[in-house]
Length: 272
Image (cartoon, rainbow, N blue to C red; front, side, top):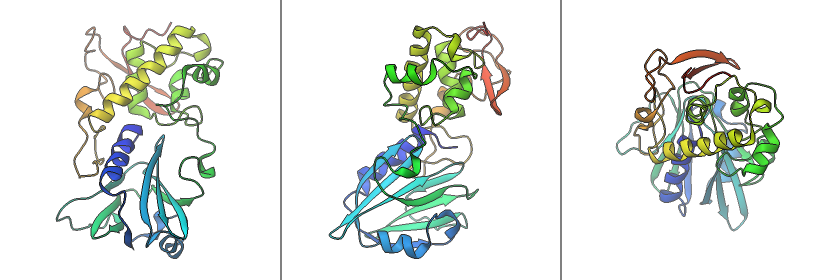
């Protein structure tokens, strides 16, 4: 599932290559990925110029403008959504929309069809995601502590909760907790302020490093130019259950927390 680093890479590429271009056409092959009707989407966007690209957590928001005003399209890639350009590419059955930016096609492809594209009321803080917490890369330590220090659920579950802070998913939560030396079942209420600060620091560190390496690809994710992310080679624990810890040599273990698989090192991340 695309998480913050994968969406950020798409956002940067769109901003670098498409901002300033007019949307001349929108081919819709599967309307099921749209919240509004195809007619409403086309009417709002076609003829307008892409003026900006904003990301909040795992959400991408495109701002379009013309003399009549602005429109904002929010995209949530969910499990298998992809946005890309690729020279010579012939869309397959999983390409549900193709944006035509002055002759340059930008494809939205989604094998599972879980992603959604929706017109929203604002380019930065749309009401449609009012329930989502602050962006993980932007949240400051005082607010972070206020949001999690009293929590009694396992910290792995807390970090996955997008209402606390937005952007982390299963991959980067496991990596953050490993680098912070925190067991996934520890409760935030039982952790001292320094440890809570270390979890936040490590989470931001992991996210920035993953952005630098183009995100993580296990199955479907590709960046804007059709290339897989290579952060997989940097993973310390995620997907490595039964292998040796790169730091201490202990065999990595797996358990389930909040319905998700969690890999950890029992030596580097003691439970108590």
